[in-house]
Length: 84
Image (tube, rainbow, N blue to C red; front, side, top):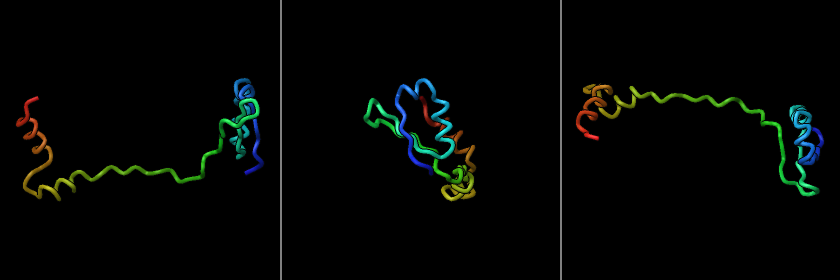
């Protein structure tokens, strides 16, 4: 990371693309309201993208109910039993 820059709210309003260019280069930018820091814009952390894995519903159903009942049948039975 390079040195931290400070910009005013006016600069953010008028030239936000330049501020984003600084952030894209790896700089951290502090936003000032007059002379008081009110926000900080940082580049994202270099992380690996999180993988979302769908749960194995068939295995879970088998663990709960065994092989005797299949999940679609269970859902249909519950729908028929309950009256909304």
